[in-house]
Image (cartoon, rainbow, N blue to C red; front, side, top):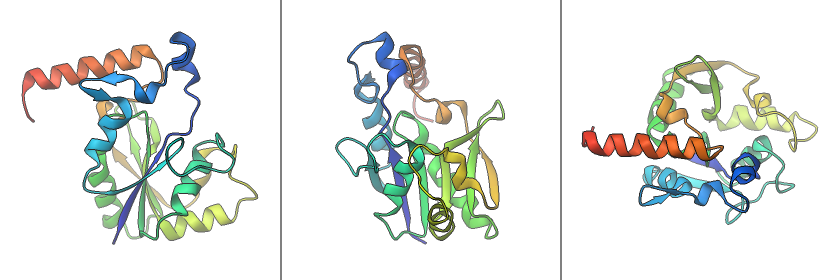
Length: 190
């Protein structure tokens, strides 16, 4: 069962740039890397499709995460497609659990991460390609539509950590990510 990870990076990052004009949250420094590169480094064992500037483009560009997922899905024939947000630097550690949960539940069309506060994290999810294509093909359009559209079938919830669910939307989130990274470094390898 082949797996591809689709990383959607087409958002405008307006909350981040509102505080730091002209700054790109995905290129913001994090440790000795950047937010995006930290995520990509953790995905080393997977085929990765980056959707956004510098990668595959959704139609139209800036069409939202559902359009980004559709664009990434169109590039792969993998049976399982994991969906992550490019601003989630620590999400890679959840990928194996999401894929394993999907394999363990043959009745499920998708699995979705649920953070410690009980919130579903659609950008921490794994999908059977056939089910996702069926849903997307049934929509009149994907641009501007909510990401929840792709979760119309049988969905299993999988716990994810607060660290895995952390997304860098503003400079405070970046500071929190940096502090967590430093704390992990101080505690040594886990």
